[in-house]
Length: 333
Image 1 (cartoon, rainbow, N blue to C red):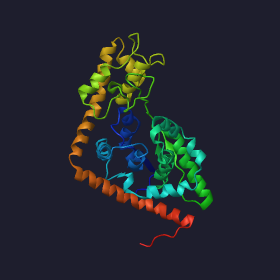
Image 2: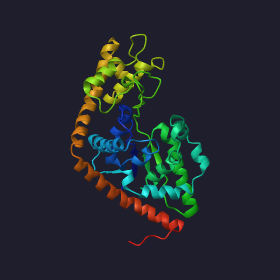
Image 3: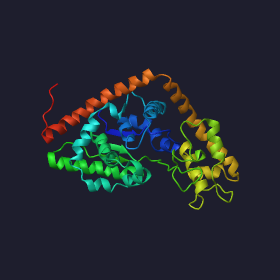
Image 4: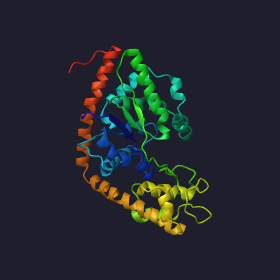
Protein backbone atom coordinates (compact mmCIF):
# COMPACT_ATOMS: atom_id res chain seq x y z
CA UNK A 1 0.00 0.00 0.00
CA UNK A 2 1.16 3.56 -0.69
CA UNK A 3 2.72 5.52 2.14
CA UNK A 4 -0.49 7.18 3.31
CA UNK A 5 -2.32 6.99 6.60
CA UNK A 6 -4.52 3.91 6.99
CA UNK A 7 -8.25 4.46 7.37
CA UNK A 8 -10.70 1.72 8.41
CA UNK A 9 -14.48 1.84 8.22
CA UNK A 10 -17.17 -0.83 8.50
CA UNK A 11 -20.94 -0.95 8.10
CA UNK A 12 -23.23 -3.77 9.20
CA UNK A 13 -25.26 -5.52 6.48
CA UNK A 14 -28.34 -5.34 8.65
CA UNK A 15 -30.85 -4.04 6.11
CA UNK A 16 -31.57 -1.15 3.81
CA UNK A 17 -29.50 1.95 4.49
CA UNK A 18 -30.95 5.46 4.61
CA UNK A 19 -29.78 8.82 3.29
CA UNK A 20 -28.48 9.38 6.83
CA UNK A 21 -26.01 6.51 6.27
CA UNK A 22 -25.18 7.96 2.87
CA UNK A 23 -24.45 11.48 4.13
CA UNK A 24 -22.68 10.29 7.27
CA UNK A 25 -20.49 7.64 5.67
CA UNK A 26 -21.03 6.30 2.16
CA UNK A 27 -20.64 9.48 0.16
CA UNK A 28 -17.36 10.27 1.94
CA UNK A 29 -15.78 6.92 1.05
CA UNK A 30 -15.01 7.87 -2.56
CA UNK A 31 -12.98 10.92 -1.47
CA UNK A 32 -11.36 9.19 1.50
CA UNK A 33 -9.92 6.44 -0.69
CA UNK A 34 -7.95 9.08 -2.60
CA UNK A 35 -6.52 10.61 0.57
CA UNK A 36 -5.88 7.47 2.63
CA UNK A 37 -5.06 3.77 2.30
CA UNK A 38 -8.66 2.73 2.89
CA UNK A 39 -9.97 -0.56 4.26
CA UNK A 40 -13.76 -0.92 3.98
CA UNK A 41 -15.33 -3.88 5.72
CA UNK A 42 -18.80 -5.40 5.63
CA UNK A 43 -19.28 -6.11 9.34
CA UNK A 44 -21.30 -9.31 9.02
CA UNK A 45 -20.03 -10.85 12.29
CA UNK A 46 -21.35 -7.83 14.20
CA UNK A 47 -24.88 -8.43 12.89
CA UNK A 48 -25.03 -11.81 14.66
CA UNK A 49 -25.40 -10.07 18.03
CA UNK A 50 -29.12 -9.82 17.23
CA UNK A 51 -31.24 -12.55 15.66
CA UNK A 52 -30.88 -12.78 11.88
CA UNK A 53 -32.61 -14.67 9.10
CA UNK A 54 -29.58 -16.42 7.46
CA UNK A 55 -30.89 -16.01 3.89
CA UNK A 56 -31.61 -12.31 4.42
CA UNK A 57 -28.17 -11.74 6.00
CA UNK A 58 -26.47 -13.27 2.95
CA UNK A 59 -28.63 -11.13 0.65
CA UNK A 60 -27.86 -7.98 2.66
CA UNK A 61 -24.12 -8.71 2.48
CA UNK A 62 -24.20 -8.74 -1.32
CA UNK A 63 -26.42 -5.64 -1.31
CA UNK A 64 -23.94 -3.72 0.82
CA UNK A 65 -20.98 -4.84 -1.32
CA UNK A 66 -22.82 -3.58 -4.41
CA UNK A 67 -23.75 -0.32 -2.66
CA UNK A 68 -20.14 0.33 -1.63
CA UNK A 69 -19.05 0.09 -5.27
CA UNK A 70 -22.07 2.03 -6.58
CA UNK A 71 -21.16 4.88 -4.21
CA UNK A 72 -17.71 5.13 -5.77
CA UNK A 73 -15.43 2.79 -3.83
CA UNK A 74 -12.90 1.33 -6.27
CA UNK A 75 -12.12 -2.25 -5.15
CA UNK A 76 -8.82 -2.09 -7.04
CA UNK A 77 -7.75 1.00 -5.12
CA UNK A 78 -9.32 0.24 -1.72
CA UNK A 79 -9.75 -3.01 0.18
CA UNK A 80 -13.40 -4.16 0.25
CA UNK A 81 -14.13 -7.39 2.12
CA UNK A 82 -16.53 -9.26 4.39
CA UNK A 83 -15.36 -9.33 8.00
CA UNK A 84 -16.13 -13.06 8.37
CA UNK A 85 -13.78 -13.87 5.46
CA UNK A 86 -10.75 -12.84 7.54
CA UNK A 87 -10.61 -15.06 10.64
CA UNK A 88 -7.94 -12.83 12.22
CA UNK A 89 -10.79 -10.55 13.38
CA UNK A 90 -12.19 -13.25 15.66
CA UNK A 91 -8.70 -14.39 16.72
CA UNK A 92 -7.56 -10.93 17.80
CA UNK A 93 -10.87 -10.39 19.62
CA UNK A 94 -10.00 -13.31 21.93
CA UNK A 95 -6.56 -11.88 22.73
CA UNK A 96 -8.01 -8.40 23.36
CA UNK A 97 -10.64 -9.95 25.65
CA UNK A 98 -7.79 -10.92 27.96
CA UNK A 99 -6.80 -7.25 28.42
CA UNK A 100 -10.37 -5.89 28.58
CA UNK A 101 -12.32 -5.58 31.83
CA UNK A 102 -16.00 -6.59 32.27
CA UNK A 103 -16.87 -3.21 33.77
CA UNK A 104 -15.70 -1.45 30.61
CA UNK A 105 -18.15 -3.43 28.50
CA UNK A 106 -21.12 -3.32 30.87
CA UNK A 107 -20.91 0.49 30.89
CA UNK A 108 -21.22 0.77 27.10
CA UNK A 109 -24.27 2.84 26.14
CA UNK A 110 -25.06 0.73 23.08
CA UNK A 111 -25.01 -2.47 25.15
CA UNK A 112 -27.55 -0.95 27.53
CA UNK A 113 -29.73 0.31 24.66
CA UNK A 114 -29.63 -2.94 22.70
CA UNK A 115 -30.28 -4.99 25.83
CA UNK A 116 -33.52 -3.06 26.30
CA UNK A 117 -34.50 -3.55 22.64
CA UNK A 118 -33.60 -7.27 22.57
CA UNK A 119 -34.54 -8.46 26.05
CA UNK A 120 -35.17 -11.99 24.72
CA UNK A 121 -31.60 -12.25 23.35
CA UNK A 122 -29.09 -10.53 25.67
CA UNK A 123 -26.03 -12.53 24.63
CA UNK A 124 -22.29 -12.26 25.26
CA UNK A 125 -21.75 -11.16 21.66
CA UNK A 126 -23.90 -8.11 22.36
CA UNK A 127 -21.65 -7.22 25.28
CA UNK A 128 -18.40 -8.14 23.49
CA UNK A 129 -19.29 -6.23 20.31
CA UNK A 130 -16.90 -3.31 21.15
CA UNK A 131 -13.93 -5.68 21.55
CA UNK A 132 -14.59 -7.14 18.09
CA UNK A 133 -14.81 -3.57 16.82
CA UNK A 134 -11.47 -2.81 18.45
CA UNK A 135 -9.96 -5.89 16.76
CA UNK A 136 -11.36 -4.73 13.40
CA UNK A 137 -9.56 -1.42 13.78
CA UNK A 138 -6.28 -2.48 15.40
CA UNK A 139 -5.58 -5.38 12.99
CA UNK A 140 -4.82 -2.94 10.17
CA UNK A 141 -2.63 -0.57 12.20
CA UNK A 142 -5.41 1.93 11.54
CA UNK A 143 -4.66 5.58 12.14
CA UNK A 144 -8.07 7.07 11.31
CA UNK A 145 -11.61 5.79 11.89
CA UNK A 146 -14.62 7.74 10.56
CA UNK A 147 -17.11 7.81 13.44
CA UNK A 148 -20.45 9.27 14.39
CA UNK A 149 -21.42 10.40 17.87
CA UNK A 150 -22.79 6.94 18.76
CA UNK A 151 -19.42 5.26 18.12
CA UNK A 152 -17.13 7.56 20.14
CA UNK A 153 -17.33 5.32 23.20
CA UNK A 154 -16.31 2.27 21.15
CA UNK A 155 -13.35 4.06 19.58
CA UNK A 156 -12.20 5.14 23.04
CA UNK A 157 -12.22 1.48 24.11
CA UNK A 158 -10.15 0.54 21.03
CA UNK A 159 -7.64 3.25 21.97
CA UNK A 160 -7.57 2.11 25.61
CA UNK A 161 -6.99 -1.53 24.64
CA UNK A 162 -4.21 -0.59 22.21
CA UNK A 163 -2.44 1.50 24.87
CA UNK A 164 -2.94 -1.17 27.56
CA UNK A 165 -1.59 -3.94 25.31
CA UNK A 166 1.38 -1.79 24.23
CA UNK A 167 2.20 -0.97 27.85
CA UNK A 168 2.03 -4.63 28.89
CA UNK A 169 3.73 -6.31 25.93
CA UNK A 170 5.67 -3.58 24.12
CA UNK A 171 4.83 -1.39 21.13
CA UNK A 172 2.44 -3.39 18.92
CA UNK A 173 -0.60 -1.36 17.85
CA UNK A 174 -0.98 2.12 16.45
CA UNK A 175 -3.44 4.10 18.58
CA UNK A 176 -6.27 5.18 16.22
CA UNK A 177 -7.79 8.63 16.01
CA UNK A 178 -11.41 9.46 15.18
CA UNK A 179 -12.12 11.08 11.82
CA UNK A 180 -15.06 13.49 11.81
CA UNK A 181 -16.19 14.56 8.34
CA UNK A 182 -16.67 18.28 7.70
CA UNK A 183 -20.34 17.98 6.72
CA UNK A 184 -21.70 15.25 8.96
CA UNK A 185 -25.31 16.37 8.65
CA UNK A 186 -27.52 14.78 11.31
CA UNK A 187 -30.55 13.55 9.40
CA UNK A 188 -33.76 13.42 11.40
CA UNK A 189 -37.02 11.56 10.86
CA UNK A 190 -39.36 13.09 8.27
CA UNK A 191 -42.32 12.21 10.52
CA UNK A 192 -40.80 13.12 13.92
CA UNK A 193 -37.96 15.61 13.32
CA UNK A 194 -36.89 15.47 16.97
CA UNK A 195 -35.72 11.86 16.42
CA UNK A 196 -32.88 10.55 14.25
CA UNK A 197 -33.90 9.00 10.91
CA UNK A 198 -33.94 5.21 11.27
CA UNK A 199 -34.39 2.40 8.74
CA UNK A 200 -36.20 0.38 11.43
CA UNK A 201 -38.93 3.00 11.85
CA UNK A 202 -42.38 1.39 11.55
CA UNK A 203 -43.54 4.47 9.59
CA UNK A 204 -42.09 4.00 6.08
CA UNK A 205 -42.67 7.70 5.35
CA UNK A 206 -40.27 8.67 8.14
CA UNK A 207 -37.08 7.70 6.29
CA UNK A 208 -35.59 7.79 2.79
CA UNK A 209 -33.97 4.50 1.85
CA UNK A 210 -31.11 4.12 -0.63
CA UNK A 211 -33.47 1.76 -2.50
CA UNK A 212 -36.34 4.26 -2.85
CA UNK A 213 -37.27 5.21 -6.41
CA UNK A 214 -37.52 8.93 -7.37
CA UNK A 215 -41.32 9.11 -7.19
CA UNK A 216 -41.27 7.46 -3.75
CA UNK A 217 -38.63 9.90 -2.49
CA UNK A 218 -40.60 12.93 -3.68
CA UNK A 219 -43.83 11.53 -2.22
CA UNK A 220 -42.18 11.01 1.18
CA UNK A 221 -40.80 14.55 1.23
CA UNK A 222 -44.22 15.93 0.31
CA UNK A 223 -45.57 14.20 3.43
CA UNK A 224 -42.71 15.41 5.67
CA UNK A 225 -43.71 17.17 8.88
CA UNK A 226 -43.17 20.94 8.78
CA UNK A 227 -44.03 23.80 11.12
CA UNK A 228 -46.91 26.17 11.72
CA UNK A 229 -45.84 29.29 9.82
CA UNK A 230 -44.69 29.37 6.19
CA UNK A 231 -41.14 30.74 6.56
CA UNK A 232 -38.28 28.61 5.25
CA UNK A 233 -35.53 29.40 7.77
CA UNK A 234 -33.16 27.33 9.88
CA UNK A 235 -34.14 27.64 13.53
CA UNK A 236 -34.24 25.38 16.63
CA UNK A 237 -37.89 26.42 16.94
CA UNK A 238 -38.62 24.93 13.49
CA UNK A 239 -37.30 21.32 13.66
CA UNK A 240 -39.26 20.11 10.62
CA UNK A 241 -38.12 22.82 8.21
CA UNK A 242 -34.62 22.87 9.73
CA UNK A 243 -34.27 19.14 9.05
CA UNK A 244 -35.35 19.58 5.42
CA UNK A 245 -32.95 22.49 5.02
CA UNK A 246 -30.14 20.38 6.45
CA UNK A 247 -30.86 17.62 3.95
CA UNK A 248 -31.15 20.07 1.05
CA UNK A 249 -27.87 21.78 1.94
CA UNK A 250 -26.05 18.47 2.45
CA UNK A 251 -27.10 17.24 -1.00
CA UNK A 252 -26.39 20.56 -2.79
CA UNK A 253 -23.35 21.75 -0.79
CA UNK A 254 -25.14 25.07 -0.23
CA UNK A 255 -25.11 27.01 3.03
CA UNK A 256 -28.27 27.58 5.07
CA UNK A 257 -28.12 31.25 4.12
CA UNK A 258 -28.00 30.44 0.39
CA UNK A 259 -30.92 28.03 0.71
CA UNK A 260 -32.99 30.52 2.73
CA UNK A 261 -32.47 33.18 0.04
CA UNK A 262 -33.30 30.67 -2.72
CA UNK A 263 -36.65 29.77 -1.16
CA UNK A 264 -37.57 33.19 0.22
CA UNK A 265 -41.23 33.89 -0.44
CA UNK A 266 -41.95 30.32 -1.57
CA UNK A 267 -44.32 27.96 0.20
CA UNK A 268 -43.60 24.73 2.01
CA UNK A 269 -45.09 22.68 -0.83
CA UNK A 270 -42.62 23.95 -3.43
CA UNK A 271 -39.75 23.62 -0.98
CA UNK A 272 -40.53 20.01 -0.09
CA UNK A 273 -40.74 19.04 -3.77
CA UNK A 274 -37.39 20.76 -4.42
CA UNK A 275 -35.73 18.83 -1.59
CA UNK A 276 -37.19 15.56 -2.89
CA UNK A 277 -35.99 16.22 -6.43
CA UNK A 278 -32.45 17.05 -5.31
CA UNK A 279 -32.21 13.91 -3.16
CA UNK A 280 -33.69 11.72 -5.91
CA UNK A 281 -31.24 13.08 -8.50
CA UNK A 282 -28.31 11.90 -6.36
CA UNK A 283 -29.74 8.60 -5.11
CA UNK A 284 -31.21 7.29 -8.38
CA UNK A 285 -27.92 6.74 -10.29
CA UNK A 286 -26.52 4.94 -7.22
CA UNK A 287 -29.64 2.78 -6.93
CA UNK A 288 -29.49 1.83 -10.61
CA UNK A 289 -25.77 0.99 -10.48
CA UNK A 290 -26.26 -1.08 -7.32
CA UNK A 291 -29.06 -3.07 -8.98
CA UNK A 292 -26.87 -3.62 -12.07
CA UNK A 293 -24.03 -4.95 -9.91
CA UNK A 294 -26.39 -7.31 -8.09
CA UNK A 295 -27.10 -9.08 -11.38
CA UNK A 296 -23.42 -10.10 -11.49
CA UNK A 297 -22.84 -12.15 -8.32
CA UNK A 298 -19.69 -13.66 -9.81
CA UNK A 299 -18.12 -10.19 -9.97
CA UNK A 300 -19.15 -9.39 -6.38
CA UNK A 301 -17.74 -12.73 -5.19
CA UNK A 302 -14.46 -11.92 -6.93
CA UNK A 303 -14.33 -8.47 -5.32
CA UNK A 304 -14.91 -9.98 -1.86
CA UNK A 305 -12.36 -12.77 -2.48
CA UNK A 306 -9.64 -10.39 -3.64
CA UNK A 307 -10.44 -7.96 -0.84
CA UNK A 308 -10.24 -10.71 1.78
CA UNK A 309 -6.87 -11.89 0.45
CA UNK A 310 -5.44 -8.35 0.63
CA UNK A 311 -6.98 -7.72 4.08
CA UNK A 312 -5.68 -11.06 5.34
CA UNK A 313 -2.08 -10.23 4.42
CA UNK A 314 -2.24 -7.04 6.49
CA UNK A 315 -4.22 -8.60 9.33
CA UNK A 316 -1.94 -11.58 9.87
CA UNK A 317 1.12 -9.37 9.84
CA UNK A 318 -0.34 -7.73 12.97
CA UNK A 319 -1.77 -10.92 14.48
CA UNK A 320 1.54 -12.80 14.20
CA UNK A 321 3.23 -9.93 16.03
CA UNK A 322 0.54 -10.13 18.75
CA UNK A 323 0.94 -13.92 19.08
CA UNK A 324 4.69 -13.56 19.52
CA UNK A 325 4.28 -10.82 22.12
CA UNK A 326 1.89 -12.87 24.29
CA UNK A 327 4.05 -16.02 24.02
CA UNK A 328 2.07 -18.20 21.61
CA UNK A 329 4.05 -20.52 19.30
CA UNK A 330 3.48 -19.48 15.69
CA UNK A 331 2.32 -22.19 13.34
CA UNK A 332 4.98 -23.04 10.73
CA UNK A 333 3.68 -22.51 7.19
